[in-house]
Image (cartoon, rainbow, N blue to C red; front, side, top):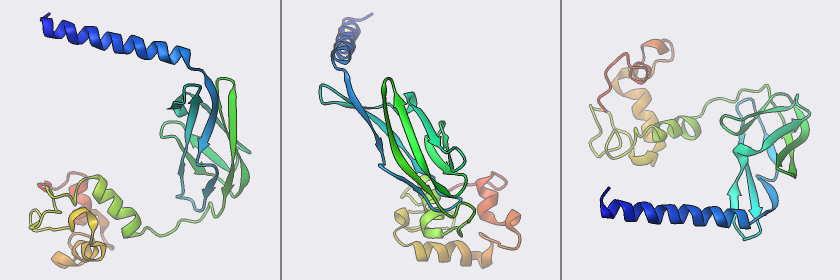
Length: 197
């Protein structure tokens, strides 16, 4: 091992030991749940939750994954531990409780219209998917000239124009309501047609 590497390893080990000593010295003073209430308003609603532990040294730590989360009554909502979200089951009110070590905290849960499937909206749902996938970035379809003849506004600043280009250009080839299996948007997303964007 070179001198430079051994020096780095020494300092890294020192930092780790120092952090461990600080963690042992600080103790938990309490936990809190964010948000302070959960309200689910449709079948597609969900709510991320966060359990924060407050320590005596003034620091806070996310302990959501290590906490025990329960909802009472169980019939109104469920907690998906894998993605740390609360999902609606049936209309009603209840309590969501988080327990970490000897501490626990609870917040109210309200579920309404749990059987209602609201319509999917381009601006609030489809645009988010295109942005997360990077479709409307400057290196893809969001560039000034677009890619492969298809252009989106940069980071979705013009949702109405994007909707028009998605649904009206190419005589509706990109989106086909009557034959979704043959629409270009779906075929490219699942790899049936090469995507060079």
